[in-house]
Amino acid sequence: MDLDAFRDLLTPRGQRALGDAVEAVAGGADPVLVASRLRKTYDASLTAAALTQARLRERGAVKFGADAALMYFTPDGLEQATRAEVATHRARRFRPGTRVVDACCGVGGDLIALARAGCEVDAVDLDPLTVEVARANAAALGLGDRVTVRTADAAEVTPEAYDVLFADPARRTTGRRVFDPMAYSPPWPTVLGLVARAPAACLKVAPGIPYELIPPGAEAEWVSYRGEVKEAVVWTGALAGGASGGDDGSVSRRATLLPSGETLTTGAGTVEQGPVGRYLYEPDGAAVRAHLVAEVAALVDGHLLDPHIAYITGDGTAVTPWASRYEVLETLPFSLKRLRASLRERGIGAVTLKKRGSALDLERLRKDLRLSGDNSCVVALTRIGERPFAFVCEPA
Image (tube, rainbow, N blue to C red; front, top):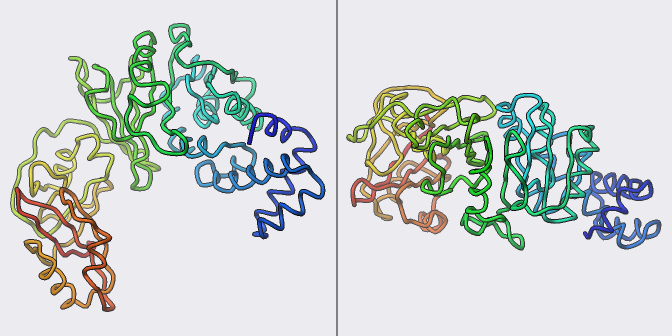
């Protein structure tokens, strides 16, 4: 979809085409037949744009709920867009009336949350089509009076003229996800240059950002939504409050669970290593990314199997949202033959495979186990020191 086709979609005729496309897609009609039917009324370009938006709105409902029915998307923009619950969580740190420059606004998921929180948002993006989409989204959701969107290079914004810099650097190139911050758009050094000039900043980045790239004195927050780590957020200036540490220039660390909003920060110190207990605890990924495994271990009165691997064990029956608990039925020094025999003896036909610190290919292992039976279990693969182990477990 090009810029002219999108603008055509915003006209009264385009809206009728979009309505027809949405109705057809929602009804599950054959895509080829739908396209043929729409082309009897609308030209090929408008038909394609309408069908593209109808399908993207259907996918967008996962991230944006009911708002998706009013919004517009590009494929890459939807992939990178923040889930509404996560964006809303972030926006709670912003005071109403805060003047924010959104330096890489994409299709506008974050500026929507910021505007709803009462912020005045000046948003820019390098791609003219994306700018039109973000502007249309703000208008469609009744936020146009709090938002301006324009085409500009993020590197050219003046963060010192605003209260807060918000940046979500593009992490996709030709449809593929980019993991190296130096390959972000704009690249990480450019982002940090903007941060250095901003009174405060909020940066949305990939969860795997290297610790050494986080600016000194910042707060880094890892956010998990229903057990899946969605993003890391780097807070600077006045927005970096609320987590322990950071006064000496070190990076404060926080993990947050959504939708509950529970948070965990540094404070437990080190955690001991010890033998396999009755239970195995798997910490939430946000706590692992934030290096808060010691804090989770303290919550469950447990210890580590290996000092470098985030599996916790213990005999207590603690219940916490920060870890899943499994009862250890059997501990095996790993060998395929031994594990297969154990599962066969237990009548295991379905297994959930987990691993930390193991190089095994789980799908290959699943095939090699040749399971049959009516029972199910969890197998956790790890190592203790240099020795590989398998733990046959069941959810506690």
